[in-house]
Picture 1 (tube, rainbow, N blue to C red):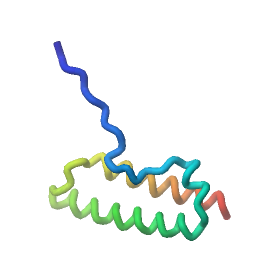
Picture 2: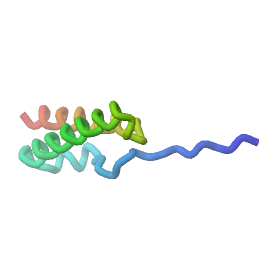
Picture 3: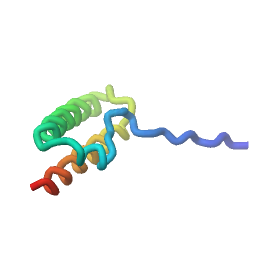
Length: 76
């Protein structure tokens, strides 16, 4: 019998649902966006030097950035 694969959740617990992000103000969202971009840059360097263990975190962080940018556009 083959063992069932475990599905992993998001690699970090920093992910917020869109509903939670919409409750934040523009300044908080802008700060969160800058933080996520900095995190992505750090992860890219780790990935390039083979230090990043969970490569799926790159995808998760990119989507988090896109989610924040979308909500910022909605607030304009």
